[in-house]
Each structure stands twice: as structure tokens, then as C-alpha cells.
Length: 196
Image (tube, rainbow, N blue to C red; front, top):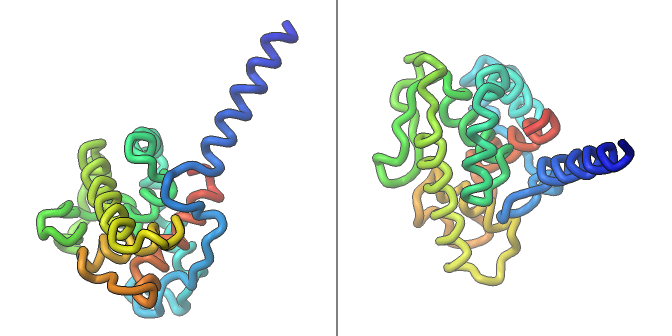
């Protein structure tokens, strides 16, 4: 019987360590970010901005994203991306699957087609999450190639800025504080603290 408890304890530790810090592109728990701009806060009816606004927006999207957590974990493992980062991107781009998105067709990332059109949340599928994550990892790898001396955290920031702004957006380390990146990282940190 004690061997069974030992095995269960090891499995719990393995699951805890996997969910606490995984992904090849930096540790979102240690990244600092200013969060959403005031423009993003205002767009969603908030009277404040920064990390507080990002966390509130993530909180609003959480009920929609929780049901896709297994998909985000599978895709995260496949692409070595923290599921919390994937959740942050989905929250920012589609309000957690609550609006229709057109993934990657413009060649410069993911764009919301019509922010006033609310689609059924069942529209998020594993192929869509995979495609968005593949675009993100491709952008991160482009940044790694162009700036080989940067840190994994800088690669993640650069990849997120290039994901939203296009591959040529990041020209130096001054371009790593784009609004998309700042907001997504703050949301991702929130999701990480809530089990993603």
C-alpha cells in the first residue's frame, strides 16, 4: 500500500512541476509586464489599465477558456509553449473563443474578423489552436535567428510582438514592449496562477 502512495505522490509532483513551469520560450512567472494599455481597457469598458485591466479581461474570458484547457495542454506539449501563453493569446485575440477569429490568413498573425460578432464557443478546435501556436513559434524562431544573443524571455516577447505586428515589426530590443505582448503576458500570468 505504501508503494501505491509513493507512486501517487510522484505522479502529483510530476504534474505539479509540469504545470508550474514548462515551455521552451521563457518562464512567464518571472516576466514583468506593464499589462494592457489604457486603450485596451477602454475598449472593454474598463476605467483602468495595466496589469489590473489584463487580469480583469482574463478573468472574464476564463469560463470560456477552461473548457479548452486540455487542447491547450496538448498543443503546448507539441510546440513546447506554456498553455498559459496560449490562453493569453486566445483571450486577447478572441475573448477566449467568444468571437470569430481568422487565423493567420493575412500572413501577419491572428486577427479578429468582427469584434461585434459573437460566435459559439465550440468554434475553437485543436487545429485552430495548433495553427495559432505554430504562427507564434515561427515568429519566436525568426526572432531567435535574427537576435541569437537574446534571452528566452526576450525571444518570447519578440515572438509575441512579431505575432501581432508581423515578422518585420521587431528590429531591436526597444520593440519588445508592444501592447499585444504586454497584455498577453499579463493575462498569461493570471491564467498560470489559476491552473493553466
